[in-house]
Image (cartoon, rainbow, N blue to C red):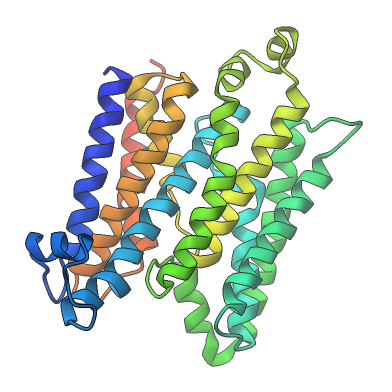
Length: 325
Protein backbone atom coordinates (compact mmCIF):
# COMPACT_ATOMS: atom_id res chain seq x y z
CA UNK A 1 0.00 0.00 0.00
CA UNK A 2 1.27 3.47 -0.84
CA UNK A 3 2.48 5.28 2.29
CA UNK A 4 0.63 8.53 1.56
CA UNK A 5 -2.63 6.68 0.97
CA UNK A 6 -2.20 4.77 4.22
CA UNK A 7 -1.41 7.94 6.19
CA UNK A 8 -4.49 9.64 4.76
CA UNK A 9 -6.64 6.60 5.54
CA UNK A 10 -5.34 6.44 9.12
CA UNK A 11 -5.92 10.16 9.66
CA UNK A 12 -9.47 9.92 8.30
CA UNK A 13 -10.20 6.87 10.44
CA UNK A 14 -8.80 8.65 13.52
CA UNK A 15 -11.05 11.67 12.99
CA UNK A 16 -14.06 9.38 12.60
CA UNK A 17 -13.04 7.43 15.72
CA UNK A 18 -12.78 10.67 17.71
CA UNK A 19 -16.26 11.62 16.54
CA UNK A 20 -17.57 8.23 17.56
CA UNK A 21 -15.86 8.47 20.96
CA UNK A 22 -17.58 11.75 21.85
CA UNK A 23 -20.93 10.67 20.38
CA UNK A 24 -21.60 7.34 22.11
CA UNK A 25 -22.22 6.67 25.77
CA UNK A 26 -24.98 6.63 28.36
CA UNK A 27 -26.17 9.95 26.90
CA UNK A 28 -25.67 9.86 23.11
CA UNK A 29 -24.73 13.12 21.38
CA UNK A 30 -25.97 13.76 17.87
CA UNK A 31 -23.66 14.99 15.09
CA UNK A 32 -25.44 18.35 15.22
CA UNK A 33 -24.77 18.72 18.94
CA UNK A 34 -21.09 17.83 18.40
CA UNK A 35 -20.81 20.37 15.58
CA UNK A 36 -22.50 23.06 17.69
CA UNK A 37 -20.10 22.31 20.55
CA UNK A 38 -17.06 22.62 18.28
CA UNK A 39 -18.37 25.90 16.84
CA UNK A 40 -19.08 27.31 20.29
CA UNK A 41 -22.82 27.44 19.72
CA UNK A 42 -23.77 25.27 22.72
CA UNK A 43 -24.59 27.02 25.97
CA UNK A 44 -21.82 26.05 28.41
CA UNK A 45 -24.23 25.15 31.23
CA UNK A 46 -26.23 22.58 29.25
CA UNK A 47 -25.89 18.85 29.93
CA UNK A 48 -24.65 18.21 26.40
CA UNK A 49 -21.91 20.85 26.68
CA UNK A 50 -20.72 19.48 30.01
CA UNK A 51 -20.65 15.90 28.68
CA UNK A 52 -18.78 16.96 25.56
CA UNK A 53 -16.22 19.41 26.94
CA UNK A 54 -15.59 18.05 30.44
CA UNK A 55 -15.93 14.28 29.97
CA UNK A 56 -15.71 12.85 26.49
CA UNK A 57 -13.59 15.32 24.49
CA UNK A 58 -10.59 15.36 26.87
CA UNK A 59 -10.81 11.60 27.24
CA UNK A 60 -10.85 11.04 23.48
CA UNK A 61 -7.94 13.42 22.93
CA UNK A 62 -6.03 11.76 25.77
CA UNK A 63 -6.55 8.38 24.10
CA UNK A 64 -5.21 9.70 20.81
CA UNK A 65 -2.15 11.27 22.45
CA UNK A 66 -1.29 8.24 24.58
CA UNK A 67 -1.83 5.81 21.71
CA UNK A 68 0.41 7.93 19.48
CA UNK A 69 3.11 8.13 22.15
CA UNK A 70 3.14 4.38 22.80
CA UNK A 71 3.10 3.31 19.14
CA UNK A 72 5.69 5.89 18.08
CA UNK A 73 7.94 4.78 20.94
CA UNK A 74 7.47 1.14 20.01
CA UNK A 75 8.38 1.78 16.37
CA UNK A 76 11.44 3.74 17.49
CA UNK A 77 12.73 1.01 19.79
CA UNK A 78 12.04 -1.70 17.22
CA UNK A 79 14.23 0.24 14.82
CA UNK A 80 17.03 0.82 17.32
CA UNK A 81 17.09 -2.80 18.53
CA UNK A 82 16.46 -4.15 15.01
CA UNK A 83 13.85 -6.37 16.62
CA UNK A 84 10.08 -6.33 15.93
CA UNK A 85 9.45 -7.63 19.47
CA UNK A 86 10.84 -4.50 21.14
CA UNK A 87 8.34 -2.30 22.96
CA UNK A 88 8.41 0.69 25.36
CA UNK A 89 8.63 -1.53 28.45
CA UNK A 90 12.26 -2.38 27.55
CA UNK A 91 13.54 0.84 29.14
CA UNK A 92 11.82 0.15 32.46
CA UNK A 93 9.81 3.38 32.19
CA UNK A 94 6.42 1.69 32.53
CA UNK A 95 7.59 -0.36 35.52
CA UNK A 96 8.96 2.75 37.20
CA UNK A 97 5.76 4.67 36.64
CA UNK A 98 3.71 1.77 37.98
CA UNK A 99 5.84 1.54 41.12
CA UNK A 100 5.66 5.31 41.71
CA UNK A 101 1.90 5.37 41.24
CA UNK A 102 1.44 2.35 43.51
CA UNK A 103 3.35 4.11 46.28
CA UNK A 104 1.19 7.21 45.88
CA UNK A 105 -2.03 5.21 46.00
CA UNK A 106 -0.85 3.08 48.93
CA UNK A 107 -0.06 6.19 50.98
CA UNK A 108 -3.31 7.86 49.97
CA UNK A 109 -1.72 10.69 48.01
CA UNK A 110 -4.39 12.14 45.75
CA UNK A 111 -4.66 14.93 43.21
CA UNK A 112 -1.49 15.84 41.35
CA UNK A 113 0.63 13.65 43.64
CA UNK A 114 -0.35 10.51 41.70
CA UNK A 115 0.88 11.55 38.22
CA UNK A 116 3.89 13.30 39.76
CA UNK A 117 4.89 10.18 41.65
CA UNK A 118 4.38 8.05 38.53
CA UNK A 119 6.40 10.47 36.38
CA UNK A 120 9.21 10.53 38.96
CA UNK A 121 9.26 6.73 39.07
CA UNK A 122 9.39 6.58 35.28
CA UNK A 123 12.25 9.08 35.12
CA UNK A 124 14.29 7.31 37.79
CA UNK A 125 13.76 3.87 36.26
CA UNK A 126 14.60 5.00 32.73
CA UNK A 127 17.65 6.88 33.99
CA UNK A 128 18.81 3.86 35.97
CA UNK A 129 18.55 1.59 32.91
CA UNK A 130 20.59 3.94 30.72
CA UNK A 131 23.23 4.58 33.38
CA UNK A 132 23.62 0.88 34.16
CA UNK A 133 24.01 0.12 30.45
CA UNK A 134 26.55 2.91 29.82
CA UNK A 135 30.01 1.38 29.39
CA UNK A 136 33.22 2.84 28.03
CA UNK A 137 31.38 5.83 26.55
CA UNK A 138 29.05 3.48 24.71
CA UNK A 139 25.47 2.35 25.11
CA UNK A 140 25.50 -1.30 23.92
CA UNK A 141 22.04 -2.50 22.99
CA UNK A 142 22.47 -5.82 24.76
CA UNK A 143 23.38 -3.95 27.95
CA UNK A 144 20.30 -1.76 27.63
CA UNK A 145 18.15 -4.85 27.20
CA UNK A 146 19.67 -6.64 30.20
CA UNK A 147 19.52 -3.53 32.39
CA UNK A 148 15.90 -2.98 31.40
CA UNK A 149 14.97 -6.53 32.29
CA UNK A 150 16.82 -6.34 35.62
CA UNK A 151 15.32 -3.00 36.64
CA UNK A 152 11.88 -4.20 35.54
CA UNK A 153 12.15 -7.34 37.68
CA UNK A 154 13.28 -5.38 40.74
CA UNK A 155 10.44 -2.89 40.34
CA UNK A 156 7.92 -5.69 39.75
CA UNK A 157 8.98 -7.26 43.06
CA UNK A 158 8.74 -3.89 44.78
CA UNK A 159 5.30 -3.39 43.28
CA UNK A 160 4.15 -6.75 44.65
CA UNK A 161 5.33 -5.69 48.12
CA UNK A 162 3.47 -2.38 47.86
CA UNK A 163 0.26 -4.12 46.78
CA UNK A 164 0.61 -6.65 49.61
CA UNK A 165 1.06 -3.89 52.19
CA UNK A 166 -1.55 -1.54 50.71
CA UNK A 167 -4.48 -3.27 52.46
CA UNK A 168 -7.75 -1.71 51.33
CA UNK A 169 -5.90 0.44 48.81
CA UNK A 170 -4.71 -2.60 46.85
CA UNK A 171 -7.82 -2.61 44.66
CA UNK A 172 -7.16 0.96 43.60
CA UNK A 173 -3.55 0.13 42.75
CA UNK A 174 -4.55 -2.89 40.67
CA UNK A 175 -7.21 -0.87 38.84
CA UNK A 176 -4.66 1.81 37.96
CA UNK A 177 -2.26 -0.82 36.68
CA UNK A 178 -4.90 -2.01 34.20
CA UNK A 179 -4.88 1.34 32.41
CA UNK A 180 -7.56 4.02 32.17
CA UNK A 181 -8.16 7.25 30.27
CA UNK A 182 -10.88 8.92 32.32
CA UNK A 183 -10.65 11.42 35.14
CA UNK A 184 -7.71 13.48 33.89
CA UNK A 185 -9.54 16.37 32.27
CA UNK A 186 -7.88 18.94 30.05
CA UNK A 187 -5.04 19.62 32.50
CA UNK A 188 -3.67 16.07 32.26
CA UNK A 189 -4.31 16.01 28.52
CA UNK A 190 -2.26 19.18 28.01
CA UNK A 191 0.67 17.74 29.97
CA UNK A 192 0.66 14.52 27.94
CA UNK A 193 0.46 16.62 24.77
CA UNK A 194 3.49 18.62 25.96
CA UNK A 195 5.50 15.43 26.55
CA UNK A 196 4.59 14.17 23.08
CA UNK A 197 5.37 17.54 21.51
CA UNK A 198 8.83 17.53 23.10
CA UNK A 199 9.65 13.92 22.25
CA UNK A 200 8.04 13.10 18.89
CA UNK A 201 10.23 15.34 16.68
CA UNK A 202 13.37 13.44 17.77
CA UNK A 203 12.64 10.03 16.17
CA UNK A 204 11.13 11.78 13.16
CA UNK A 205 14.36 13.77 12.76
CA UNK A 206 16.47 10.61 13.00
CA UNK A 207 14.20 8.49 10.77
CA UNK A 208 16.85 8.15 8.04
CA UNK A 209 19.43 7.10 10.63
CA UNK A 210 17.02 4.49 11.96
CA UNK A 211 16.85 3.04 8.46
CA UNK A 212 20.62 2.60 8.55
CA UNK A 213 20.37 0.95 11.98
CA UNK A 214 18.52 -1.89 10.25
CA UNK A 215 21.82 -2.80 8.60
CA UNK A 216 23.60 -2.93 11.95
CA UNK A 217 25.39 -0.37 14.13
CA UNK A 218 28.73 -0.92 12.43
CA UNK A 219 27.30 -0.23 8.98
CA UNK A 220 25.43 2.83 10.27
CA UNK A 221 28.62 4.19 11.86
CA UNK A 222 30.58 3.55 8.67
CA UNK A 223 27.99 5.56 6.73
CA UNK A 224 28.44 8.57 9.01
CA UNK A 225 25.79 8.06 11.70
CA UNK A 226 26.78 9.25 15.19
CA UNK A 227 25.47 5.99 16.62
CA UNK A 228 25.86 6.66 20.35
CA UNK A 229 24.43 10.17 20.16
CA UNK A 230 21.46 8.96 18.13
CA UNK A 231 20.75 6.12 20.59
CA UNK A 232 20.84 8.48 23.58
CA UNK A 233 18.51 10.94 21.85
CA UNK A 234 16.04 8.22 20.85
CA UNK A 235 16.04 6.51 24.25
CA UNK A 236 15.45 9.82 26.03
CA UNK A 237 12.62 10.70 23.64
CA UNK A 238 10.95 7.35 24.35
CA UNK A 239 11.37 7.85 28.10
CA UNK A 240 9.71 11.28 27.95
CA UNK A 241 6.84 10.14 25.73
CA UNK A 242 6.06 6.93 27.60
CA UNK A 243 6.70 8.40 31.04
CA UNK A 244 4.28 11.26 30.40
CA UNK A 245 1.62 8.93 29.03
CA UNK A 246 1.85 6.23 31.69
CA UNK A 247 1.91 8.78 34.51
CA UNK A 248 -1.66 9.81 33.71
CA UNK A 249 -3.23 6.66 32.28
CA UNK A 250 -1.57 3.67 33.91
CA UNK A 251 0.03 0.77 32.09
CA UNK A 252 -1.54 0.10 28.68
CA UNK A 253 0.03 -2.84 26.91
CA UNK A 254 0.38 -4.08 23.33
CA UNK A 255 -0.14 -0.73 21.58
CA UNK A 256 3.59 -0.08 21.22
CA UNK A 257 4.22 -3.66 20.14
CA UNK A 258 1.38 -4.52 17.76
CA UNK A 259 0.78 -1.28 15.85
CA UNK A 260 4.31 -0.79 14.39
CA UNK A 261 4.56 -4.50 13.66
CA UNK A 262 1.27 -4.49 11.74
CA UNK A 263 2.02 -1.31 9.80
CA UNK A 264 5.50 -2.48 8.87
CA UNK A 265 3.85 -5.31 6.97
CA UNK A 266 1.74 -2.79 5.02
CA UNK A 267 4.21 -0.04 4.11
CA UNK A 268 7.62 -1.58 4.75
CA UNK A 269 10.44 -0.74 7.16
CA UNK A 270 11.21 2.82 6.01
CA UNK A 271 10.94 4.83 9.23
CA UNK A 272 10.20 8.05 7.36
CA UNK A 273 6.73 6.57 6.70
CA UNK A 274 6.54 4.00 9.49
CA UNK A 275 6.95 6.45 12.39
CA UNK A 276 4.09 8.84 11.48
CA UNK A 277 1.91 5.90 10.46
CA UNK A 278 2.56 4.22 13.81
CA UNK A 279 1.61 7.40 15.68
CA UNK A 280 -1.69 7.65 13.80
CA UNK A 281 -2.34 3.91 14.10
CA UNK A 282 -1.67 3.90 17.82
CA UNK A 283 -3.96 6.87 18.34
CA UNK A 284 -6.71 5.17 16.32
CA UNK A 285 -6.38 1.87 18.17
CA UNK A 286 -6.49 3.37 21.65
CA UNK A 287 -9.44 5.70 20.91
CA UNK A 288 -11.44 2.75 19.56
CA UNK A 289 -10.37 0.50 22.45
CA UNK A 290 -11.44 3.08 25.03
CA UNK A 291 -14.76 3.61 23.28
CA UNK A 292 -15.33 -0.13 23.44
CA UNK A 293 -14.29 -0.21 27.11
CA UNK A 294 -16.92 2.44 27.91
CA UNK A 295 -19.81 1.07 25.91
CA UNK A 296 -19.66 -2.69 25.31
CA UNK A 297 -20.11 -3.92 28.90
CA UNK A 298 -22.61 -3.06 31.66
CA UNK A 299 -19.72 -1.52 33.61
CA UNK A 300 -16.74 0.38 32.27
CA UNK A 301 -13.72 -1.83 31.67
CA UNK A 302 -10.09 -0.72 32.01
CA UNK A 303 -8.81 0.12 28.56
CA UNK A 304 -5.70 -1.99 29.19
CA UNK A 305 -7.94 -5.05 29.31
CA UNK A 306 -9.33 -4.24 25.86
CA UNK A 307 -5.91 -3.63 24.31
CA UNK A 308 -4.71 -6.92 25.82
CA UNK A 309 -7.68 -8.85 24.47
CA UNK A 310 -7.21 -7.30 21.02
CA UNK A 311 -3.44 -7.09 20.94
CA UNK A 312 -2.54 -10.58 22.10
CA UNK A 313 -4.41 -12.57 19.41
CA UNK A 314 -3.57 -9.97 16.74
CA UNK A 315 0.12 -10.17 17.52
CA UNK A 316 0.07 -13.98 17.43
CA UNK A 317 -1.65 -13.84 14.04
CA UNK A 318 0.90 -11.35 12.70
CA UNK A 319 3.74 -13.45 14.06
CA UNK A 320 2.42 -16.56 12.35
CA UNK A 321 1.78 -14.69 9.10
CA UNK A 322 5.28 -13.21 8.87
CA UNK A 323 7.19 -16.16 10.31
CA UNK A 324 9.98 -17.45 8.07
CA UNK A 325 9.08 -20.58 6.12
